[in-house]
Amino acid sequence: MLEVSAITQIFGGVTALDTVSFSVAKGDITGVIGPNGAGKTTLFNIISGIYRQSAGTVLLEGKDVTGLPPERLARLAMVRTFQNIELFGAMTVLENVMVGMHTKSSSGLLACALKMPWSISEERRIREGAIKWLEFTGIIDLADHTAGNLPFGKGRLLEIARALAVEPRIILMDEPAAGLNSQETLGLAQLIKRIRDLGITVVLVEHDMELVMDICDRIVVLNLGKKLAEGTPREIQESPEVIAAYLGDDD
Amino acid sequence: MKKDLLLFTGFSTLVMLAPQLFSGGYLMNVLVFVGINTMLAIALNLLLGYAGQISLGHAGFFGLGAYLSGILTTTYSLNPWVAMPTAAIVVGFLAGIIGFPILKLKGHYLAMATLGLGIIIFIVFNETVELTGGPSGLSGIPNLKLAGISFDSDVKNYYLIWGFTLAVMLFSLNLSNSRIGRALRAVHDSEVAAQVLGVNARLLKVQIFALSAVISSLAGSLYAHTMTFVSPASFGFNFSIELLTMVVIGGLGSIYGSFLGAALLTLLPEFLRGANDYDIIIYGGLLMVMVMYMPGGLVRGIPALFRKIVVKGKAGNA
Image (cartoon, rainbow over all chains, first blue to last red; front, side, top):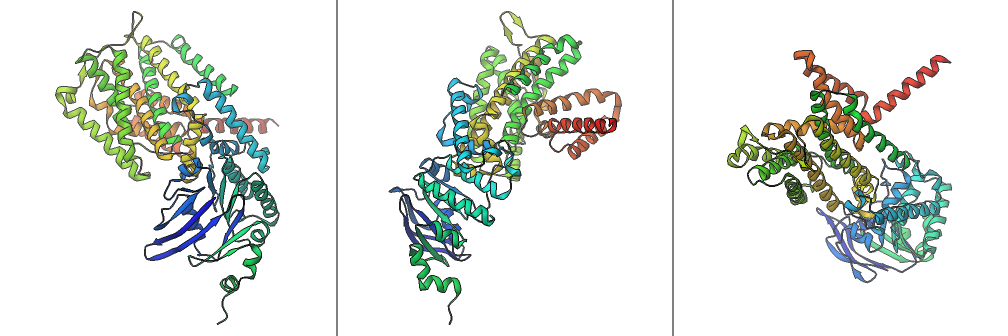
């Protein structure tokens, strides 16, 4: 589904990522973990087209997507969420998700402004689609609220609903559990599994080990910009390198 | 949706009845300017209030529309109805071409670049004397004619200008409640998130910049054909700032707000005329107070004030 090979990112003189390679299988939930500063978010920014890497390639469903801008990747059915949720704060919850339908609609500027018949029916379809995703994530009762006023946990759900409206085949989530309480994290775990059950491949960066071990099929461990280990949750838990990186070597 | 339609119908009815309620050529003439400024404020608001991109050069696009219409109908004897769309298309293209590099800039840098653009256009109006008449202006621009009616009186011009203004309002209201309008607002709030969802932010910004220029050009053409005379003084940097003030005072991201802002800033100097030399001080002071106490603009500030008074009144009765 997603193949990352030899990604290297150099910021000034600092090597943030050093020849990182891994692949994500279709339909899996893959976790990317590692201590702070390991380069997880940088990696996500590269895969999602926000940064341009110094070297290395990204293949999406076998297609070379290296260096494509985020809006092109959305049309190739890849979408992401952000660690510090990036909502459209002045818009309503429903409108936020309706923006997610952008690639699934096509009325141009003039058609919209002149209310052409096809743009009216498209508008209805966008609204219905958005409502469906608000129901899926369980925040339909907040549809008319201003997104900027949502509590953090609900904002997180909204960001996921909005990303799902793109109808992605792969979704990248940057620390989806950050800032959530334990109850919300449990709900999130269920939601991520339900997303996977829709046939959507999930890749997430996460610090909450309990969550990662619970839901991930495979885990990639980064440390200091390098891939340290890759495997099933059990393999990772038993890997001496990983234990050393997290707990510190006793030398 | 029903509420929006009702509001627009009500507003249009008021606009159409206004000449029956008020009379006097002078007032009609002022209201013609309210219409033109409303179109311009809406044009700038689409860019600033919706897409979040500033322009300090919009008087330039307004002037280009006016001059192109003027030159095409006088020097080249074109029919005004042909000259107007021709000017709009030329200005739209020009804005599109300039927009691509310029809209890569953000914030202060974009403000500086558009400021420069406005100033360059202003200089061209002044210096290309054989084409524009230079500082002394261009006169003898024909009025618009439709089905044997020549729009040459204040009342006729009122209906002409407000017909176009209402059309621009409806066009913009529809746009703001569509996928394009939402994408614009999304780019305003978080450009990166909008891009991740598949919105081509760069292209969208250029499109709206061009649309904004086209509406400004249209307002310029209408100005030229109603005034029958244009000179560079109307299209300088000051007027760009005045437009910006209308948009902010009226309410960013609100079409009706642009009308309120345009109406206030056009009518206020007329009312203050009696205050002799103090008018500019009162004018400036009022604007300061309004920005301080109505940061959301008139369109949000007036209902809030109204609610406050009603609530206080009810509390007083109880």
